[in-house]
Image 1 (cartoon, rainbow, N blue to C red):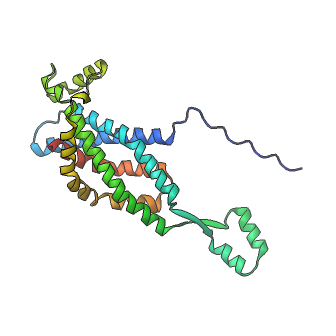
Image 2: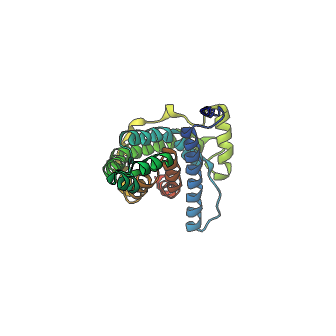
Image 3: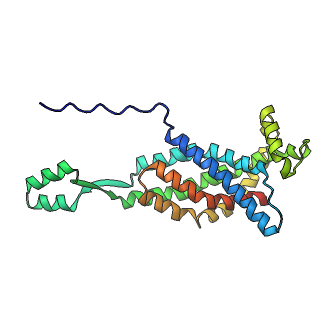
Length: 250
C-alpha cells in the first residue's frame, strides 16, 4: 500500500517576511554606521564622543525607506536574469553516454541528475544593470532624502533643545511625539534637487570603487535575495560610514 504523502508544512503566520527582515537589518545597520562615523570624527578631532542622535535617526529612516524598493529591484533582477540554471551532473552525463539506465535511475532517486550552474551572461547583465541604473537611482535617492530631511529638521537649531548633541535625543522624542520632528513642508525642493545633481557624479564614482566587487560576489555566490540583502547590509556598514562622513560634511 503506498505511503500517504506528508501534509505540506503550515506557514507560520508570525514569521517575518523577508522584505521586512531585510528592512529592519538595513535600518539598524545604517544607524550603526552613522554612530561609527561620529566616533571616527571624534577620534580624528581629538574630542570626546557625544552621539548626535539626529543624523543616526536620519540614516535609520533612510534604511526604512530605501530598502523595500531595493529588495524588489534585486528580486526583479534575479527573476528576470537567474544567476543559476540546472545542468546535468558529470555523473549523469557519463551514465547517459553509456546508456546506463540503472545508474540514471539511481541518480534520479538521489537527486543528483542535475545541479545548479552559474549563468555567466545573466550574472554579468545583472551586475551591469545594478551598477548603472541601480547605482544612479540609489545615489539620487540618497541625496534627495538626506538634503531634504536635513533641511526639514533645520528648525532644531531654533528649538528649545538647540543643536547640541547632548539634547538631540530629547529633540527627537519631543518632535516625534508632537509629530513635527520632520517638517517637509518647509523644504525648498528645487534647492534639494540642485544640490543632489551637484554631488551625483562624485558619489557614483565613489560607489564604483566599492559596490561592483560586493555585487559580483552577491550575484555569483549567494543564491537568494534575502542572503544577498544581508550580505549587502553588512558591506553597507563600511559604505554607510563613508556616506555618513560625506553627509556631515555637506
